[in-house]
Length: 419
Image 1 (cartoon, one colour):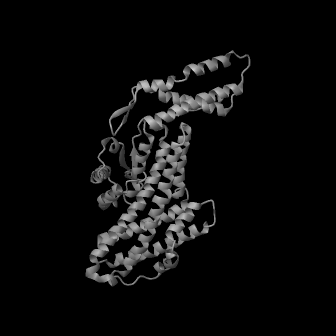
Image 2: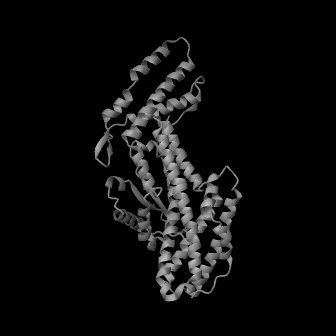
Image 3: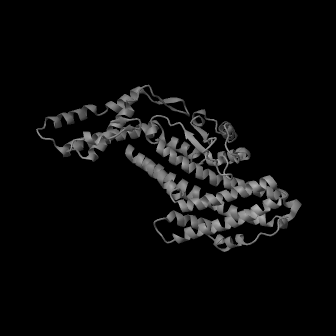
């Protein structure tokens, strides 16, 4: 049966003497053949504008080996009794043949590795300088709740950021855009958290080119978006703390180090944690897993192996970035929100913090201390569990010199007067 989402098995139509595993292989072959039968589609190398796949190439994929397999099934058809082993063997041969050609279509002719690198640059923030500039440009209005014009403004800033960092390839930039979910008005409307503004409503859209849709269905793109939102929150916290350092340095000569000592201390503690979290994310998770994915793609010529490797890659990223561990993710989100709120207070109110803002900073410091302590306790509780080695790795990055173990309690103490 064929549905809007593609082909699926109809159990009531499957003969009882044919196992489901064989039907799944036949289903795969049918879906692959439909891909090859796509007409009037040309895959273009964006760097050279040279067609990579034409109708002739697609026909050659479809027809290669057809005579051989027709002869095999004709021989099976003439046998007086149905031979399941021989039938399944013939299906396996067709499946292997099609999978190899589908691998060639995706990996070689459609240049899958280049597309994966592009996905990494945008969804996984591989082009760190791009999002550094984007956060700098868009921060002033992104703390506000989204409006009907926010999406246009966000994409204008995103395109400007791409221009500033030298990303001018139209074939690449046209594939990506940022979407903002505007909250409904009236009764039942959901208002985003006051601390998150538009940032929490931001998603990345990707126009998937044929035939890469076989590797990037909607469910995979949704997972990439969850990764994008988390990685962007870490990047935003890091950028905002860097901006806070610059603000404190700017006012150091006027007020002296002593007058801003508590702010300096809090920013230093936050920066230490976020910088080590970012290092864990980039080095221990993203680069390591992406390198392993490329190795698995290089070492096979089977489409389904590539597809499974890609799905496993995305799921592993979700796991090692704690998207599948709500307690850890919740604590990390609270910590990153505290960093962002603290930096926003400094941006808006330095050099002279009003009394109510001083109180807010003191409350943020206490919350950050509790959140950091809770995170360390969660990570330490699984330190000897082999089932979650990535948690141990993050603990090593955050507390390699026992800095937080010794100092997080100092953040809970009352803050000195802020001058």
